[in-house]
Length: 489
Image (cartoon, rainbow, N blue to C red; front, top):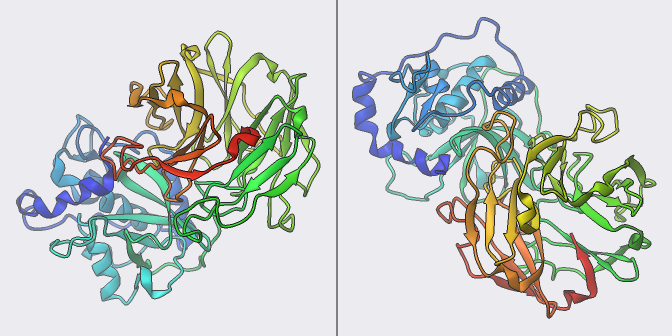
């Protein structure tokens, strides 16, 4: 899989070919018949396109609906109206321009197929804001990236997407040509790959808006915390902010006791069931009942899981020998993936708002796989960083396998879009592995414990590491004494 931001840099090299192809000009699409009028509309259109499986992907190399619609690029892929078809036609700018056009943004004739043209548009209208200038992005803005930091680029901006959510630390965006599709992603607002933001002209409303994060944590920031359970049933929070802690996660504060009586569960899963950005806990009792411990550490005055009584959210879960929290559907509400003894895998979809406060009741469990009995460990981890949780599994020989997921790309059948990929060996030396976006970059890392209680971080940025996660750096020792826990989440 080639990242959109990496491939978009090929625009500069292919400029001459593009000029010839387009006859020295750009075809300007007409304004929509019914233009929207606000930033909220921009977000709604971006999300609509994210969910439109008839066109939220590319065929072959850079053959997209948006390239044909916006720029009349050469026909490709055997699909009517689609355009592109080679490395010259990376289509993030086409997608972003389409979203803005549909929302009634004005002055778009100056935006061409280069992501750079969005920055130029903003500068010309005094609507561009650099990342370092202190501007808090707003929903509906275009976010522009300089991912290679090359001063010699003819077109410095390598990627553009649409801002759909903002909080004090992160920006959430939807973009085209991200992992060959329309996907959503998030980055810390301090990320050096972000060049800046461009406001849309001619629309109204929409101040900076909180949005559910892609990476969830107990404390509600983008850095995954760890929770450990001791044999006496007490629960302990190890808070993480790897930036605050100078690159040493879980060292910034002492472990905090946040609960008792957790020994009554034979399985506990960390999962943002409520979709508010604060990780909840789901526990299963020996009788097969499932219980939700809701968390909002701000609401609960710094004491997670104390704000409300545990809520019974299911029965009959004793038939599973493994349950994993995974936002398979990519909607911000963590689903549960469960394995039966026969190796079959089942998806329990969750949207607690859609389901009137009762998660996992909105639809029947869906069988999404078989043959998973060959793994002795499975964790949910958004390894690819596209907002759809993948599964990482370990075999008895210590090899590690990635089952990539994009449920939209795969027509509603997660983990079927590509063959499992071997991404490691020698993992048999760990007695526990946790999926955790420790670094807060949107790509889930793996944290592993050895039998002597030492904790190791396997950093992941699949884009940085050329499609091979966990190979970009050596494992880093980030703790010791973790053997006191019989469960770590």
